[in-house]
Amino acid sequence: MSTRIKMNETNPEAYKAMIEFDKFLATTNIAPLHKEMIKIRASQINGCSYCIDKHTKDARKLGETEQRIYALSVWRDTPFFSPEERAILALTEEVTLIHQHVSDATYAEAAKYFDDKTIGQLIMAIIIINAWNRIGIATHMMPAL
Image (cartoon, rainbow, N blue to C red; front, side, top):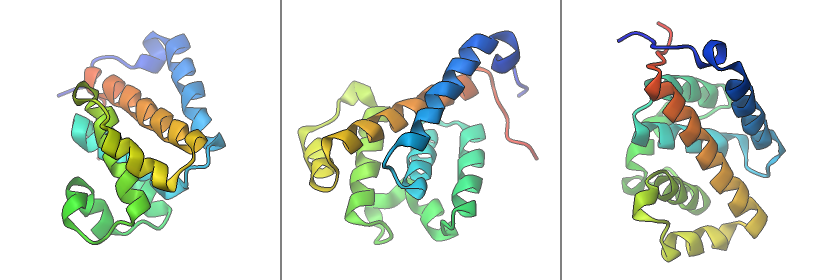
């Protein structure tokens, strides 16, 4: 499979808008490792190899362990994640799989650990990586060897 188009070259204005959208994450209260967990988990669900490769590397640079990275796809079945991280991962899955809706239980669990502003920031972080996943998948972006 080869890359179809390079969005930054074919549609530079749209790509620039995505970069600006992504810059919002730097202004949030979300911990850096939690941002990477969101990006990795959404990318696993969506099947974006480019984003999985990029964000697992970024998570490792921030000190994330291999064990936790490998376990993200089965986080419910491990003791590796805190209650706050479990709330983030559940919200990530339900926003990513939005056709199933975000349940009241998932939202209430997130509200136990995060204020309204941070919940909004978490939702935006999830939306941003889902947008990047769609670009990566639609254009066949490939991780470097």
